[in-house]
Length: 370
Ligand code: ZN
Image (cartoon, rainbow, N blue to C red; front, side):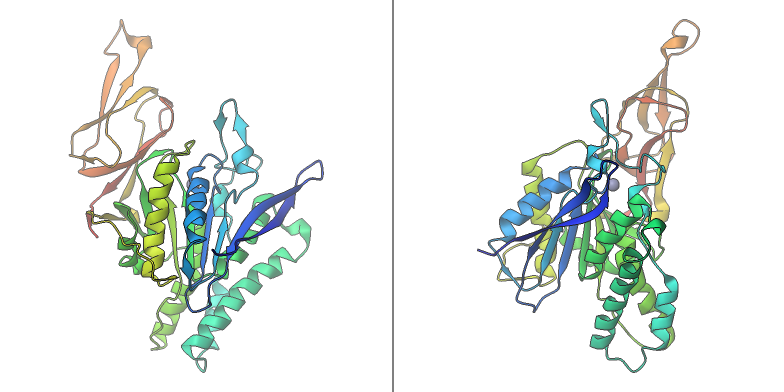
């Protein structure tokens, strides 16, 4: 059985002086395979990733590992404790309003400088030195003056430091009420078939502050800049945001399914010796990020969500009913809401009461088979 090492990393302090810390679990491989970093629960209500990490550890301790594996449940020690009544909030820093998953760091200049002075490095040296440069870049900020780092930035940088040490990065999230889906960088579309996830969102090489982008954008940009110099360099890092379903929910059976899905992908990446994990046979629907459409509530009211998640809707189908009881005597109180495109419903708002303009649904449109 593999030894699992635990280290608690301090990522901040709260007002009464107590430390904010996160548990980091590590398993050592024999060094011949890719290393892996998996974190969960950056958004407070998105707790299911912790159960998936539990199910992963239960299996990883029995496997023959080539690569090192690092797992971080409760990645954001503020988020999952941020309650209002019976609900967990935890998508945004309550003080600044900033999304916790938009605080990672990327310096494009680092890529350009590195691309310019890397011509006499072998691919192997290049991978090694660029990885070290990314980590050093994060370290410089973490070790700099404390007054320059906001609470969420300090948490993010500590996580990013761990992520840059790995070749494979998985950030486990959930939607509000949601079908499972996967954010995959466009260059890794073939690898996305090894997850047991039917819905795959293909994202471009643009940094918007999220963990997956912070892990792959520097490498993808380096690959593009080297290509301009006529050098063929394969992106050696893959990073995904894995959306496990709905928030505010722990389901250990479903977590086992998702752990097996992740193990299937890691097995394909050669992280294990003699493991049996293979992807399920299923139809996988892909959509480009530009075709991932938000549908905002056209009016305020009480909502019955009609379009089932993961379900294909046809242009003109009723996706929801909005009830307006203040007009029961004066006009029609029940309003069907329709969507004018063929689409797959991926997620919907978590509450049945909405303001005009609340994000009601998100749809994959212009989908194609992966
Ligand atoms: Zn999330």
